[in-house]
Image 1 (tube, one colour):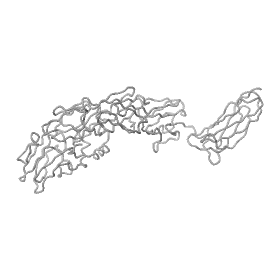
Image 2: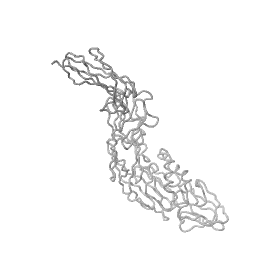
Image 3: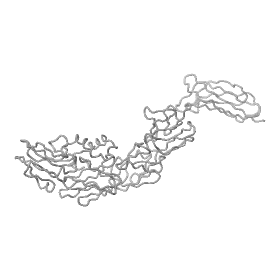
Image 4: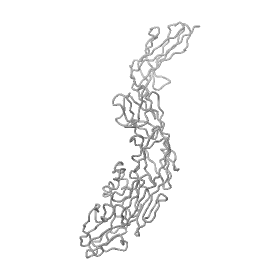
Length: 503
């Protein structure tokens, strides 16, 4: 930023935190900035405070300026509205003005007799020499974004927003360059000023802006956005004048954006992705290395959103579909089979008609490809494991049973093994397992579970079936009953088919 600027980096970050994105995106950016920046004003570098001595009642008419307030450095503690003529008591000496950004080149003086004295830097932009009334009339400056996909506005007092694809002419006092802001209060690095001869001056803009006399045209850099890999089917780039443009992600889209850090995206209907990227001064994509897990294209002109692989298994809810809302979100996804999705980090809302009240819950996916429930939003029918979300209103346990050998010999014996396993915790279930030959009606016995040597989340029990069965097919059932030190919720009994062969 120019050394004459009165806004530092902390001021701008505060502005971004204070002004809501929606308010900025709907054209109130400059107006919203005024109130905040008033509290952050400091003396501009090199500015002279007015001299000491008797005060003179002076009049300042700045109604011709597009900026809607100004500050008198060293005199005022808050911006003075320029919507009407200002009357203020000033001491003799140089008076320095700014309008939220850099100090004006025109720095008139109050004489000991209480009149204005104008230096040559005020020629053509101010009048009133020899009187007590100063008129600040400024010069025209034209800002154009006809080639840009976002709007821009300067860090000056007033609603100086130039929407995407438009051209606006304002009246500024000549001053050093001030930073242009894009999107949701994103500093663009590009600074624009107005020389005393009325010509636009640029700093740090590179090829992203072009000057012709009193006009500047912002062209930005070509930027390609590829979100085709995502399972979500639409997005919004969070930047001014793109707020309403919900864009299909089925093709690669081209934008022209100013160099800035902090661009973001929404997917579906207002799901804000929890990552940001930037466009560097050469027009190349930048983002943190940690986001390589789901992004690619750093150092190029194309950002590719690969997404994170996340499995949503809602088969426990039966047939039907689920959404990742909120509100209108596409597409609806089949819940009769596990879905392997590619999603950006963010907070999603799982919703399904098969889900008991409240019918939805919030869960988040981080850039480390780990899912979690949002605080206070967990649902008793759901659990997460790594990047997987499982939604099943059945008990969080299951019973398994098998026999060996299978097939067994005519009149021989075989070993039946049952397991009780927990889907969400690594515990060895305790309790008993009762085995029944459903085909013959014989209760084979009840056995106490011991810790499984093969699975960290199962307890197991075995017995020998010595019914000495004749050839045929038999259905063997296992039923778990919780007891002991580590009981787990009961689950439906399991069964298997035992084949007995003739020998």
